[in-house]
Image 1 (tube, rainbow, N blue to C red):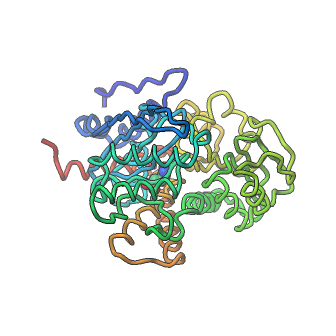
Image 2 (cartoon, rainbow, N blue to C red):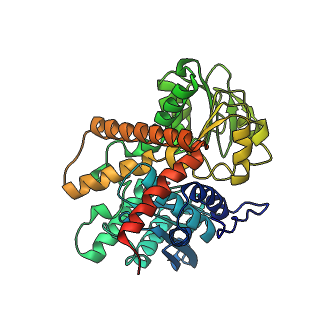
Image 3 (cartoon, rainbow, N blue to C red):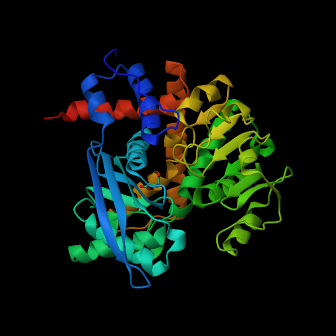
Amino acid sequence: MAYIEPAPIKDKENPFESMMSRFHIAAQHLGLDDQVYNVLKSPEKQVIVSLPVTMDDGSIKTFEGYRVIHSNILGPSKGGIRYDMDVNIDEVKALAAWMTWKCAVVDIPYGGAKGGIKCNPREMSRGEVERLTRAYTSAMHEVFGPDKDIPAPDMGTGPAEMAWLMDQYSRAQGMTVNAVVTGKPLVLGGSLGRTEATGRGVMISALAAMEKLKINPFKAKCSIQGFGNVGSWAAYLLEERGAQICGISDLSGAYHNDNGIDIQKAIDYRNNNNGSLEGFDGAEKIDPDELLLLDVDVLVPAAVEDVITVDNAHKIKAKLIVEGANGPTSAKADSMINEQGIMAVPDILANAGGVTVSYFEWVQNRLGYKWTAERVNRRSDRIMKTSFQKVYETSKKYDVSLRIAAYIVAIDKVSKTYTYRGGF
Ligand code: GLU
């Protein structure tokens, strides 16, 4: 593969470059054809829209919205929509490609996409967020579709935004189209089990990895960064399986209790405290940077990108990292993690439980039928376990990390599909 320029990584890592450097390594192991490499390295479609929205004070503010479709070779593209001030096209491009690999790793019939709006939903009223969501949906009307591109929640969005999106899209179509988006409220065709799905998949991946490392879950100590939907559910479900959660954190700070934090108590506290752990007294407040470095068995970064970097990777004491967030480990830190003998279950595998249950939601919408929570959980657990095993075996076969193995599994599937379908 001499024709492939090594993917450059600058000092301040850019998420797209981070994604590309792993893609590059996996492509080399697979001996990927250069034509397929060139197709998969760039997104199929990038849409940037300008969204004028009337604010509560009567002024008009213009927001920038993005949707990137990395690939729809495997099926309609799938991926969440992020509302955050840090949203930018490079991040959305990386997240869209990660969705392609994620759907391929767990073998669901979707391509990858991601969207976002540069905004701070915490500083906006509910009405402003609703108008922004409707403006975005209108602007993306030609992009979205139940057989084309199916959005879902991501950072800063949840069931309420998905409901507005579904409603706005349906109005324009003149009929209810609930399969155009997943992560909806239950009454609008949401799926049982979707809310906890990503955290549940993190728990299943963590248990599968602990089994390989011979870590007894009942003796395992865990530290979890981020106490939003993914982190808090992962914490709750890991605790339920016997693990002790010794560290948690959110934007208000990090909290440590070596004897284990009562997670139900922390969730109740957060729910009654405007979504924040500020003032939580079930643990001692520590420096947020210390949370990743606690003397625990399992570390779950479930917040944002690039938190495990060359600056702190050498100080991590955990034996296992399970990536609840997308892109929490910078590409440059990968080799440091590997050299320390730490097993890292990569994002595109560990947090794939969310999109897996999104797929089940879409299937139920199309069937016009509702599954029980037991059926949803049983099927998603099975997919997570099978996918973990496949990635684990691939890592042995190629003698690579679980991360590169996951990319190998994904790129192999996508490239084979591409080869059969052909190009122009
Ligand atoms: N935003 C989630 C992710 O990054 C879910 C995507 C989906 O369900 O389509 O995996």
